[in-house]
Length: 169
Image (cartoon, rainbow, N blue to C red; front, side):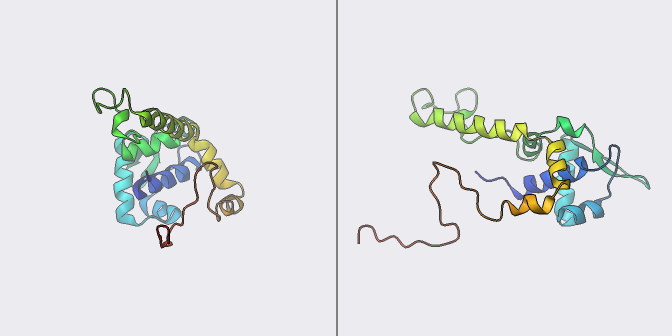
């Protein structure tokens, strides 16, 4: 599973808006500069965020984009689901007869636990918290992730490097 670029950009927009004083409006070009998102792609992302009622847009001289709800009530999960739809690691996790194997498949419970963990982590990250982290020592915070994050129990992968397998040779 990989979050799409649109979701990543939507998160950037929401963090930026959450870091502004309440009631602030930001015009499209400023949002594009602040988030590093091209104008055309940003327009699509903004449309989806407006449609999901996370942000509002206003035309005219005092117009721009603003949060439609308090930043503290919006989680990273809300933003991702506004763009991607509900988080589903596997179709067998859908309600109803989505998979005839789900009652006995040994992987079903693992998928369910993994999805619950993702939902819990993303749901616990509020836009207010992320915006405050972005403001305070943002350069230091981002340096924390210069090296890949290692998760215990997950084997290391050689991303971007082709590994020649000799199959017992």
